[in-house]
Amino acid sequence: MSEKPSMPTSEALQSPESLATEVAALQKQVDALKNLLLVVDTAGPEAAKQIFS
Image (cartoon, rainbow, N blue to C red; front, side, top):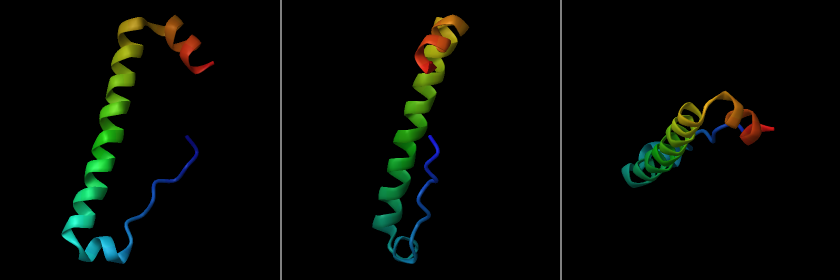
């Protein structure tokens, strides 16, 4: 996960629709990370090592 998040362009800042799309995409990423953390938290450290190895 070495990708840098894309900075909103000036166009996105000027367009509420584009900004809403950007926010929705970020929210999906946040939800995915929360789900992953929940799985790791539930499964425990050993399972986490297997997932990330």
